[in-house]
Amino acid sequence: MLVAVTGNMGAGKTTLAAMLENFGARRIDADVLAREVVEASEGLRRRLAGAFGEDLLDSEGRLDRRGLARRALADEEGRRRLEELVRPELEPRIWQALREAEAGGGIVLLDAPLVFEWGLQDRFDAVILIRTESGLATRRVTRERGLAPEEVRQRRAIQQDDIPGGSVDYEVSNDGDLQSLRSEALRVWEGLQQRQDGREA
Image (spheres, rainbow, N blue to C red):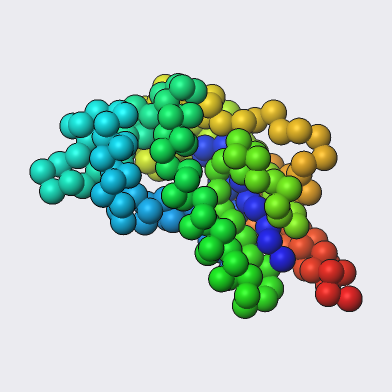
């Protein structure tokens, strides 16, 4: 059973996915795969530097990923350009990882920020959307990642918050503490297990 966990920056997507993993799901982290894809492809690193600044590559060809994010995610045009370069190599790697995990049975999660932006939602058996009040999300990211509040707001603005009706199977609010989120994660997990039991019956 394939499940997508998505949400805007600072919503707590990865924290929720990790909780579900602790309950027994297999988790595929799209951000980790993106790093692996970029690190494995010198050609991709050079194309990214060509698009966003040659100074993003050091003398050994390593990419300044934080600097890339600052430039590429500053506006919608940059995000689209980044997607055009990365998606052709990243998306096949994501589906390969999901197929390999799914072969082991059980519930497989994709922890990914751009499920709706990439139009992938219909390829999953269930979609979980986590939301957090904008100001709270900005404060969390500022504290945890050291980004400036304006930078966080810019990145959040180019992710899709207006999700089409009927596209989400489980919506989680993460405006409280970790214990509240864990209660929500348990609710979702029980629902996913019931769905899986129904599919296997």
